Length: 337
Image (cartoon, rainbow, N blue to C red):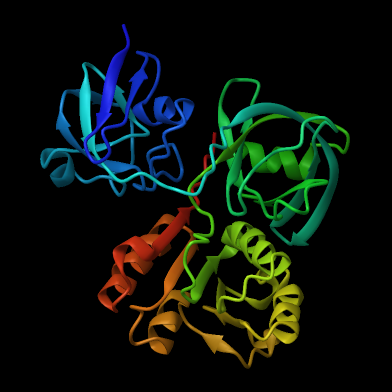
């Protein structure tokens, strides 16, 4: 039997089936709630459970602590409704009614971007152009029903192919399959688009982008969207990597900064090698932002990378004046199986 979910803030309602999580049901109903990973790792879909009971599927303790659970919080991507619910959470505007759909995609090209990063170029059927917002992600549907999520690295106007940046993880079943076995012209099945990591175009605030590793993929899509649409907002791009070879597409970022007066590019290496001959910034990329901007109250921040990096950025940026509602993140998690 289905249960009804009411969002206290707006009064919107939707039904959730016994087989669905609350978040999945909201997405199906066209209700845009905050979320990121959809697998209990990032905590972006945390909400207050005002009334009703839920059962939580497995999630990571960093996404919701025992204290938060005891205080009446729920993680919508893992919450299964046991009765009618009332939840308290904000809704996300700007998605323009875009809903995910399942599509086949042909592998058009594999491109080595770094020693452990592959760009996968996917071609959709000619009659099935994907409508998405720059910064959103797709989910591959594997033969065993498991899913793997990857951000779209191109902007919507450049939609001949979908470009994904895939980090090859040692013993990562899917990423090693992509690196070693997946052939051009192979057909994959995906569902898209997902995610709330996209540019809030109703603001003219300067935008600070912080990208760690392949977190550059959605940031690249957003910046290319801004440049293509002649959005004049100030763009400050911080990229974090360990060594210079890890800073893939470095030349592209330098070109943006060289050609566009509203773009500033600041790469930061945490462990540069002597052979890198690195003369730029070193240390942690989040700290570089804090060192440069003592008052973040007039900025928006878009942060993409490992969950720990996103969490530290959120806490430290808010402490330095960033408004809570002006922080947007996409935390990358890795599935080994």
